[in-house]
Image 1 (cartoon, rainbow, N blue to C red):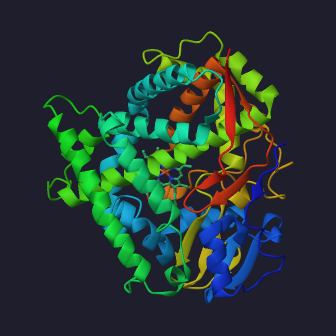
Image 2 (cartoon, rainbow, N blue to C red):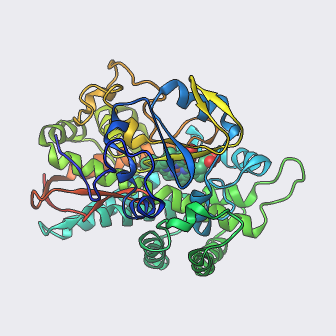
Length: 453
Ligand code: HEM
């Protein structure tokens, strides 16, 4: 099995209270380094960080309690809000209380199973174009992370907003990349200052937000110019036309901009990374790649038939699930306890930070047999299903990922199209590190050689 390396070594075993500066350095460079080796063996690891109790939870019953049974007692942390708010504003992911409830109700129909065929058509068309473009490159080395980021953004643009991203993609990618590499990295003050007190970096983040919102508004204007009075054809129509059941009001323009930004950011980078790691694992494991190729050989994966074919792509989907197990793009869910609680027998004091880390949970030695092994058969029909609260690539409970079905549809179809067209191999065997800041990404991204089948 492929071994992945974390660029900064983990905190030494038994680290109970790293000094704030060191902890912040770890989190800013590679958040996976904050998990000490015992986190992969123990159900509960407690320590102090930034003056607060921090509890890493790997006990499924405790996780169920926090994400489902008593979810309202757990909020996003101030550091998480500080880092995401300049990008997502008051959209679905960062909203709370009644504001969140109203947004979630309004948006849910756009992500319901019945919209998947429409989305699958958009995905299939974009995948076809990507395959055609990759064919023109012959066997030149390809950066599949950049290729998947480009493709996922194109899919987000076309399927959610009926916009080809040619006019916006470059600027959007540059802004998101700039943010992730600099202002999106947490520093010590992010963890120590209360939310109402801005740090110097927060001021720079708000400067970034002005530029970011300028771009989102231009995208909305371009989309509105294409609007028609016909039935809603994409997520934008549903959001722009949605009314509050109580007041009858439309989303105000500022909220609509935040919603558009949220769906693009939350939806494209995560899916791009999931696709990258799936392709990486396939390149490292030719027997799995060939089995997937057998499943998709001869299938017509075009826009008209893609949705109907999805249920047949059983092995491809299992590969996606297993890649999401080993490389969950959303590697940690952090929550702040509002009031004292007991979760699955674990005492959680008010103001403690609870870390539910898919990265650790999915590689936990008590929860998985041979956790480091890439084995898609774990997710084939008939295999014993993993505990619902030991496998959380999309979270769980009321705040579960609203785009999970969309992401799975997209990843399965793109993977099927690429493996149907190409044999995928690494250009070299250099070890691949993982760097986790906003999502868990390869660093440096390895190069691949694609040979036509
Ligand atoms: C492989 C791809 C994806 C992964 C791994 C992923 C992961 C997650 C996770 C773990 C959460 C829960 C966060 C928490 O509880 O703190 C979440 C929430 C969310 N995701 Fe995704 N996601 C993916 C794709 C998408 C897509 C395609 C969209 C939209 C088109 C999307 C939109 C959202 C939104 C809006 C939320 C917030 C939901 C709420 O708070 O009510 N995600 N995602």
